Image (tube, helix red, strand yellow):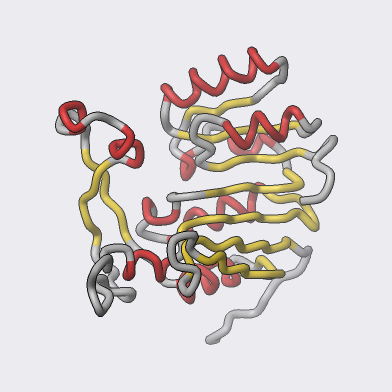
Length: 213
């Protein structure tokens, strides 16, 4: 990312604004898009307490109101537990490409798909998950594990779909973004296996011909 001072950054699915506020404190002009009104309220109150300005759009990221009026950004940031909420990666990466200006940079950090297949293997000799499972599954909301058991039963459920590394990289490349690096980050509990990854891709002013005419 380099020095964020003066850069326009949009944090898609930016949750409660932790990264956005930090970047604003470092001198960036930051916009957050997230569907949760509770997240927006928390982020705006925290930004005010920190003495920085934050533009927070409470919206479905695939249907941002008046998206064309936002202009172009130097950086699009997305992180942690986001891609599994989409049943079509091209839709979200199309938003990324539209948001970036010329030579803009996309930074994505998320849970490694391999970890999904390995996550239930404690005390087992073999992984219990299926890396290539593309079915849509019901699960708990992300913050459920932070609440007491008696409060978790009242929460709604979410639907999620797992993606492979190949599907993620292909979807980003198909949108015409040039992948610069894909860094796999080892698990803190078992460094033999990846837990997270960071992908960086840049937007260039060029059109790619279809892979299969």
